[in-house]
Image (cartoon, rainbow, N blue to C red):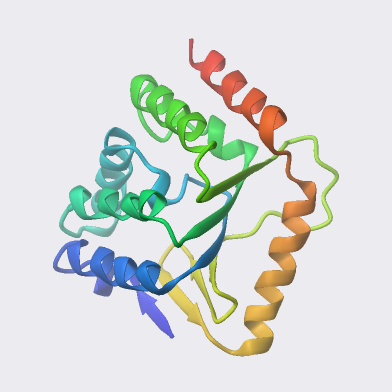
Length: 193
């Protein structure tokens, strides 16, 4: 299903965020790949505010940050696993002011030890076996949600969902984890100084 962001956000983001919360309540394992910004459930309020201001200004739609940040609760409730892959560029893009960026990067370090989070970073220097893609979320191998500039696409065709799972596996093999991932995050924080 193809849904334009402008249509989805025409009355603000609260309904869209509530729909996301419903989907995440049902999802046990969510695999996420992002090449642009940290996923909403890992965003700090300051970072989410800066990002939402940019998005709503671009789309000409109402702003509603509180609903976006609320989805982070799934990290702490149990029963959910978020396997997240970020391109290193996500750590370096200046999507918000330096203080908000610093807070966002420190937040990534803070959530890494959670049992519900597996965070991998794909370094700039990784030998690519899968090219950088648009952001996508694979929910329990039953649906892939793809985010483009203008729309959200919900993919439910099993062979297409399998393609997203295959791409995710290839991207995951290029990522670094644990201390190596923390070192990349710390280097991005240091670059803000």
